[in-house]
Amino acid sequence: MVDGDVDACELVWDDAITDVRTRFGLPVIERTPELVERMRSRVRHLLATDPDGSFVATRDGDVVGVAQALVRDDVWVLSLLGVAPPVQAQGIGRRLLEAALSYAGGRRGMILSSRDPKAMRRYALAGFDLHPAVTAWGRVVHDRLPATPGVREGSAGDLDLVAEVDRHVRGAARGLDIAHLLEEAGRLLVVDGVGYVVVRDEGRPVLLAARDDGAATALLFAALAGAPRDRETEVGWITADQQWAIRASLVAGLELHPVGPVMLRGFARPPAPYLPSGAFG
Image (cartoon, rainbow, N blue to C red):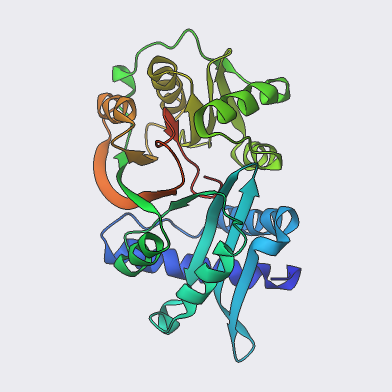
């Protein structure tokens, strides 16, 4: 991948993810200018931090597939894998995955999969264990949310806390990824010494990690409290290891819907309490 591929990669990814969400009855995310720029920024970020983990497939000079993987400490994450719908089922996705896996170097791995059976099969055959997941979706019922007095607004001064919690929960810090997430998401909430959550403007937690379920629950409630009353929000990638998140989402009035699994390789146990980022694991 080179810088000139970024716009085409965003378009391929949008076509691929829209196709999957439509086929499996999940809400389709509108391709707004803000979302387009966010995705392009993500691709550029990983191309800068992990150029050896960034790949494209081309046909007649056009980008038709994209894969990006990142390595942070001892953890490899598949951040992005998409193939344009008209050329799917032709082996392009398999070859892109093989290229991305070559960047892993024997490290532990994490993939947040779509519900596409072919994708799940590829990941399982590559040695990843499947952990079924749900997403919580809907409008938050604000009157149901409890107070969260232990949660405060975070700042750049809390990045050491973020790194410490990440190493405790998943065995790896995030390096430059956390600064990128904060730049695009805009809000960090913390419980001192215990946990943090990164929140988008619509009250959607895009990443949460904590040392215990109580702190994780408080952080999730605090994130959801920022959701607009007239728009849906989402809590993604909730596995059976995150019962605290299921309970909190139901209290908040959200509905549970099946999504693709969280796939792990080399972890002694799934990270918990933890809501991973789809882009950064």
